[in-house]
Image 1 (tube, one colour):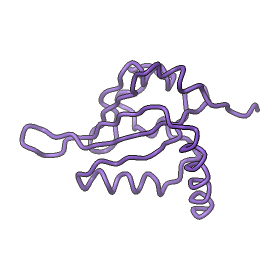
Image 2 (cartoon, rainbow, N blue to C red):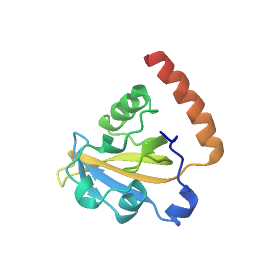
Image 3 (cartoon, rainbow, N blue to C red):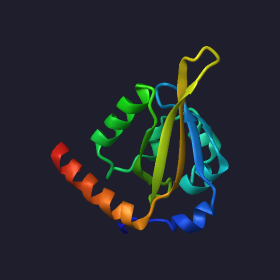
Image 4 (tube, rainbow, N blue to C red):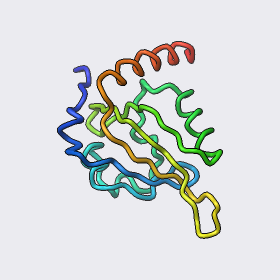
Length: 137
């Protein structure tokens, strides 16, 4: 089996952000066109699925545990995420996840906006995530 290769994030993003929304359990309720293009999934394949449909196995569980703890407290989370495309390739994104609220001020879900991550940040974060994965084993 051929080793998966990264996509050229700068080219495929074309200055547009990936945006998605989920319910409180992380089920996708909205995916913009750029999310579909970059992930390789259609909107129909994404909406109704858990957001971890694109989780790369190189992502440590602890990174997502921290993200959930942060957003469930009502605070924005920011970090780098390695995602898995439908075709097996991967891409890194600089991600911000924030709670969304209903008309009564109650959290109704979460919105994520993503842009390409810098090469330096990818290298630093990949090394950190590798150490975290070793601790999880």
